[in-house]
Length: 447
Image (cartoon, rainbow, N blue to C red; front, side):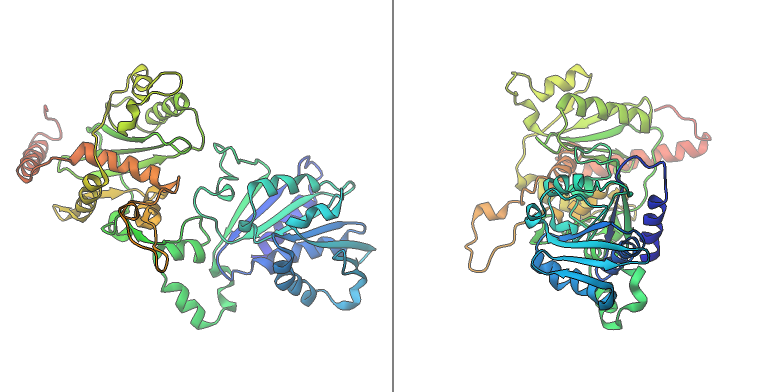
C-alpha cells in the first residue's frame, strides 16, 4: 500500500503540467495500513520541500491525537522537530534543505487555522466526514510555490454515501480531481496475527466484502427481508437470451429512482442482467436515459415494463408518471399489492429450482440489488426493551436499497403473481417442445 500511495504522490508532485489540485482517496480494509501508508508520502514531501505547510486532520482532534499523531511521532525522530506549539498543534520539521511545518487539527476546529493555505492536506478516517466538510476543506489546498494535493484514507463507506459517489460521473457529488485506490486488508496480511486473520475470513460475505476487500457496501443490521437469497446460489454472470423480450422493472423513488433489466427464459427462469440507480435526476431524464441504455445494451428489442402503482399519482404540475412513460411509448404494467403479497412471493421464487437451476439469477453487475437482497433491505432491529408493533414488521426505508429492491418486487409481482403450478408446468412443457424443434430444425423454427 505504501509504495502505491507514494508512487501516486511522486507522480503528481513532479508533473509540471498539472493545473488542478489532485486528490487521492484510498479506500481500504480493516488494518490494511492506511494511516502509515498515507503518512509515508506526506513525510517525504515535508522533508524535501522547505517552506511546505501540511495539514493532517480527522473529524475530532481527540481521535486524531490518539491515532494518527501517535503514529506520526513514532516515525519522526524528536531531533527533527525544531519547534513545537502544542496549543496551536503546530510543529516545525527540519528537512534536508530547510524547515517545513505541519499542523494537526480536528475538522470541527478548522476555523481556528484562519485563512491559512496548505501544500498538502492529509485527511484520515475520511468516512467520518460529510460532503459539506470535504467541500469546505478542499480550497485550502492552495499554497503557492508548490504542487498542492489532498490525500484521504478511510474504511469503505456504505453504498450510496458521498464517498462512494465521489468518483461516479453521473453523481452530483462527482469530483473529476479525485482518484480512488481500493486496497484490501491482504495488502498488509503478512503483518497481522493469525487469530485476527482467521476471524476476518470467517465473517459473512457482506462483512468480508466491505471490511476485508475494501469495497463500498453495508453491514447487515436487523433481519433481512429476503433470507431465501443466497449469494453463492443466486449470483453468477448472465447472458442475453437472443429471442426473448427484455423485462424492465421500475421504481420511481423521489431521490433515488431505480431500473432493472432482465429476461425470462422459456422455462420461466428470471435472469437480471443490469441495474441503474441514479441520484436526484428529473423523471423525464430518468425515463429517456433508461430508453437510451436499453438500446445501447440490447439494441432494438421488445420490452415488457413493470413498476410502482404510485406511477398513477400526479405531480404538482398535474402530470402522472404513467403519462410521461406513455409519451415515450412505454406501457407500464402495475398491480396494487401489499408487503404481505410481495415478500412471501419473492422468497418463494428465490427458493425455487427449475430443471435443477435457481428460478432467479442475478448478474454481479447488479451490485446494489445483490446487497439489498443480502440484507441491505431489512427489518429494523428492535432496541432493548422496545415493544414490537405492526409498524416494526415493515421493511426499513433507507432511501437506497429500498428502491432497487422494490423495483425487483414489482417485476416479480408482474411476472409471477397468480401463476398456478399447472400453468407453470404447461409453460415448461411448451419450452421442452420448442427446444426439441430447435434441435431438429437446426435452430430455425416458427413461434
